[in-house]
Image (cartoon, rainbow over all chains, first blue to last red; front, side):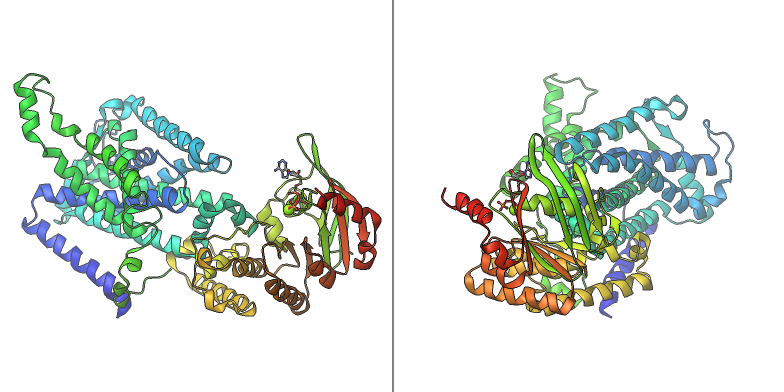
Length: 359
Length: 255
Ligand SMILES: Nc1ncnc2c1ncn2[C@@H]1O[C@H](COP(=O)(O)OP(=O)(O)OP(=O)(O)O)[C@@H](O)[C@H]1O
Ligand SMILES: [Mg+2]
């Protein structure tokens, strides 16, 4: 019984989402907000392995997201639809429904391989230097994509909406919503199993005292490698989902600003707290959505007095004022984040009655 | 054949010769001590043997095989466990987790076992937990298994560190100043505990210790170093009356 509470809740949530999306009770805008929430949860919880549990400072999560986004997009367009880039589909639109998860997994695997790019220097380097390496890795990814003209270069790549419609034509369900939900639950579940195992606790040991870890038989290089690959792989999964929600990808999305956004979620939630990251990702998604249209009067005013050209909307940039400000305030007044190192079950012990939280 | 056979091990830090021509042969099940004034190079000897540094020159043979140049975790999985002069526990993790993580050398499962919670994973995790609890109970630490080490008294933290090293099931246990910072009652407990561990587990124990009563009551063989060089070795009685040793210590004490 106790074991089933959380799965049962998730199943209910899933059913409600499907129903709401199917009947239109949830409009397209809110559907997309919820889907970005899922993507953000994957991004925050996966980055939390490195920046939280391991205590490193990776600033390039958006780069790994980009790898996953591009690899899965290219694959799904090549396999399932007719496109300018690849011509006739290799398999055909009707297979999309069944093979789509494989496309996402391929994106995740590719991202986790690129994660090696950062994991290997992490054997020797820590702190600031590793942070710089992660930024460099993210830039390498971004400029590589920008310079491959065949896949659209800096203009971006599209065609994934055709894949999505093909899936809906085969079986009429809100497929992308389903996959985002499954991907999010899968990621959190995977991370939980990893970090609560004796193997995964090696990551925390490295964070708290790397020398003691090494002397107490933890193969620190291997643990770091695995942690980076899991984290980056899940970022790739998030990227694949992200690209298919939007229907197109653009390398301009995966800048250091995107990485910063994910980092703020981790620090807001509390370093090393899985439930904190989930919570912070939910809050941040809502905040970012709110800021999209916030202070509209200011925009109108600035247009009115002709300070900014009509074509430029100042509302879009509010998040770049508020997010960094939030980070500054957070570091000043609550550097441990919402949850600190604790989990939901530590803050509300009553929850243990309903579910056996391990760890 | 000796369990640990160190031959002419030498270590330079820049121009400083921290350990020079260090030679030692420890037998299976032997209890020995390494003593010397502050800065003599004792901890460096332990760091070299445990793979933390690679010696500039010399050989380190353990159990018939060279362990020189191995990484610390590899040395540990060969059967050498140690504690630190300044306690190095993972202070933000429970005592039980501290012991469990020291089983990384014998995990017996991989990443996918832990994703899928395979029977092998479940079995190993149970075994690891049982083993950890067994070691903790052996040292009378079962009640603090779920505490964080940072909330425990200093003396208990020392014991947890010894428990963690023991949980590796080493053939050689190296203790770096186990009695440092303990009060005299705790020191007596420690002497008894180390004696018991030595008898029950039958392992070799090699300790660095400043408190002579600990060394004299436990160890059958003592090596004294100063400025990285060996100045004496022998039985406790022999060492106590050795003029070079007295000089090294008095020179140190009269500052
Ligand atoms: N990593 C290092 N780099 C440079 N010098 C070092 C290093 N480690 C130790 N030393 C130097 O080597 C010498 C021996 O140090 P060590 O810590 O081995 O002494 P010790 O005998 O353990 O002393 P204590 O009784 O104070 O613990 C000291 O002069 C120390 O400053
Ligand atoms: Mg020392």
